Each structure stands twice: as C-alpha cells, then as structure tokens.
Image 1 (tube, rainbow, N blue to C red):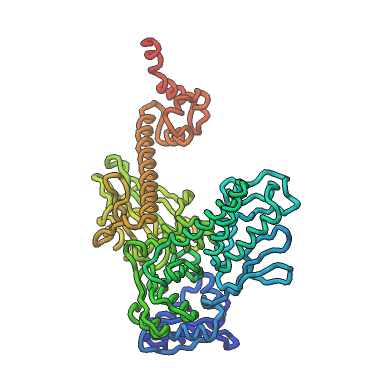
Image 2: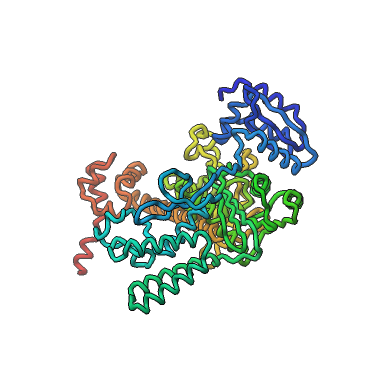
Length: 619
C-alpha cells in the first residue's frame, strides 16, 4: 500500500465514537470518493486501515486513495442509512455502487426496403427507418420485438431479401411455424408487407382490431379457394393468440407489485427487480453490487437506494428474505410514495414461485460474468442463507475420517471452489496420535490442527494449505463439530464449521451444529451441493483407507520373503503399487528395483509364483 497517510488515518479512528452514523472518505483534492454507514463508527472505519492487504480489490483501491475522512453521528442505524442514501445521491462518490437510472431510451426500429425487419435499438438515427418509441425498458422493447416477429411469422435470420430468395432451404423457424419463409419465393412482397404493417399496428396496441382483420382475411381467402394463403392467416392468428396467452402465464395476486431478489456471488452480488403492472410482467432490471456483508442489511440498503430514484413505489414489494429495520423501511417507503407500502416475504404459493423466478434471473446474470453456471451460483447462495453466513462460501473444505480396525486410521480432505471440485487441492492425512480403539473426534481434531498449522507455514502463498477456507464441513454429527470448533477458537481462527449427516438413503439429511440440526430439504440447490460434497469426501477417504490397508498387508507379506526388509519393501511398493503388478513383472524388472539384489529378486520371484505349478497340475 503506497498511501503515506495510513498511520494518520489509523490514529484518527481512535477518536471516533461507538455510535451509529455515516463516514465520508475524501481524496487528496478534498473530493468525496466514498460514503458509508455504520452501526459503530469506530469499529467500522478503523477496519479500513488495518490488515489492508486482505481487503477486496475495490476496497483496497479506495483505501489507497483516502487522504482524510469526516463523520456524522446519527440517533439510529436506520437514520444513518437514510443519510447515507442522501449523500450518495447528492455527491455520487466514485467508489460507491450507485443505482443510477442509466438505461436511457430504447426504440423499435422498422428497417426500410421491400422486406423490412422489426428490430430493437437504443439509438434513433436518420437512416430512413421508422421508429416506435421511446421506451424506458430494454427488456420490454426486446420482448415485444421477439413476440411480434413470432406472432406475425416475420424472419429474424441473417438472410437478405430479395437477394437470398431461393438460395437455400428454409431454416428451423419455418418448420416450427415461427416464420413465413420469404426465402422460398412463395411469399409476395405485398403479402410480406401486409404482415409487417399488421405487426406495427399490433405494437401500437390495436390487438383486437388486428385479430378481427386477420380473421376476415382468412375467411375471404378460403372463399376464393386460396387455401394455402388462408392457412398462413390461420397460423398468424393462432400465433397472436398465443402471445396474449403467454403474457398471462405469470399470475400475481396484486394489480401492481415489485418482486426483488438478491443473489450473492463470489465477486459481485446481483439484485433483480421484476415489475408487475396490471397483473402482467412489464419490466426486469438488474443491478450488480459489491458482495454483501449481511443479506438483510443489503436488501434494505438496495430497496432504499432503488426507490429513492423512482417516481413510483408499488403498494406491495415482495422480497426473497429478511430485511433489516423492516418497520422503519415500510414507513419510509410509505411516506415517500404517499400511500401504504407492504414488504412481503412469501413462504409458499405463487408469490414464492415469483421470488424463485427472480433469483434464477439474478443467478443467470452473475453466471454470464463469472463463467459459473447459474445452478452453482444459486446453490452457493442458498447454502450461505441456510447457514447464516456473512458471505458466499466460495472455498469449501470437507473432511471425513475412515478406519479399518485400529491400525489404519486416515482422513480425506476435499475442496470445492465456486461449487466445483478442485481436485488438485485434495489432501490425505494418516492419523498419528490416536492409538488403540478408534476415536473419530480425536482423529478429526488432529487433522484440523495439522491443517491449520500448515496454514501458518504457507499463508503467504495463498494457495493449497495457504488459503483460508470460507467454510469447513465435517462428515458427522454435532459431536464432530463440538470437537473441532473449540480447537480452532484456541488457535485464533473463526472459520464457520458445520457437520453433515445422511439419511437412510445416504443423502445429506441435515446440517449439524454444536447446538442442533438444520434441515436442508427446502433448499434444493444447497441440498444437491451438500450431497455431492459429502459423497466426494466419503469416496476420497474410503479409497485412501483401502489403499493404506492394502499397503500394510502387502508390506507385511513382502517382509516374510528372505532378504526383503522395510527399505526394499517400500521401494517395491513405490515401483509396482499392487501385488498383482508385481506378480506380472519379470525377474529382470524386479531386479531393476532400487536396493534389490539378484539373490533377493530370485527369492521374491519364487515366492510370488510358488503355487503356479500346483494349479497347473490340478487343471
């Protein structure tokens, strides 16, 4: 960190009060670069100027540019939140995530020429095209263009007409009745433009009139025995009706409402707002935010910032989880909108399905930017909420103890990074301190102690044992958790630790804590992820246990051969791995093994093949 003011800033934080308020970070020119709110000004602001190298890149960059800060004490945390929103709106600091209404205007464009196309665009140019709009929402514009092209069977391919007529077979859209296929040459310019003009009238809102007109045209064509043309009118009419039906698929309880979901990713969080007006979905908005420290606080902060920029607030706001300061927030929104506003958290039914729909959209939006699937992002977000974590558990370590008798006690550690197995980070442990009767709790304590001792040795590397996990999962019940958490606390670590218990069908049934259990049945994404983690760590530890047991048995067997001691037995195992491979080796290959002599090699070869003569005679 090149900021020479860090000592001054750290010393200044010692004078801050422990009261709620806002803090205002300024650069060397005195310009405001960040505004934040705090429950305790002293605790929050001082956190910026210690352990600086552990900050997220954006926070690190902001701290690098802080020259001084000011603060304002408030009577409550919610009052601080209101003041924070006001300052952000007034000063637009560069390091704040701002909910700017920067979508601009959007248009529907009808290109010129004999075969015009209907396209969405965000610019109105002097290019001879016709434009319908402006529209505020890009979502509404794109959705309208897509539906109209399908309803009126207009082409959306890259072919150019009339140049490409009869130059190739019609594409899939023709066969699924979503295009009239002017490329076939069977559609006249007049008929094409008739459909185009009807589509434009439809966009402008003349739905019923268009349907009546097309229906009459279908009857007239049939009366003239132009049955192919009548069939095309019929298909167009059915497509228009299907568009109307599809708009009613999403049913809502209230005439107007917003459905808001917040999904946390490893780099960004994403808030999605689905806007319903007149019982229909009319808009969808995305906002990428910094990873939220606490979901309830993040929802409240987002809702205040979002509606502070909007002219209207619906009477009902449906959210996907708890909001901080719920009563104060409802009062704030009601006062701002001049009507009563209710914030709902649905637990089941249609509203719950709408929340799920919003969350899926948010997950998909993050996945497009992180190369992670929306399913993985959603599962990690669900797991975070299930366990009450402050951030997404991007880097998860899972442990399982496996033993065959009392002499072969081992543990496996698997790693899931971003919801996917990171096999290069898997580790095996041979338990050393537990002797005699197997003790899973003592074994787990030993393994975790060794793991975090290795962290101290490699933490500067930031990979492997040098990377701090976001979450530790133990294959076992609350006894395993109770055995490990005090150990980690005594070592100075606060990593969340939970257990995983299976049901009769060997699927992860519950998450265990020191105090009890958490059901995972209502968290489908988290359930699937936990099951895959538990299955993987169990498989990995069992395979190591069996291998270790076989090695011991093989080691004991080899030592019965004259001339084979511990060193030669170890070298033989390292070269051949299994008794079967050793038996298939030639005498020369055995003799090539380090430390083996001609005499010991002959003795081993004879031992491995001593019963073959008897088997041949019996055959």
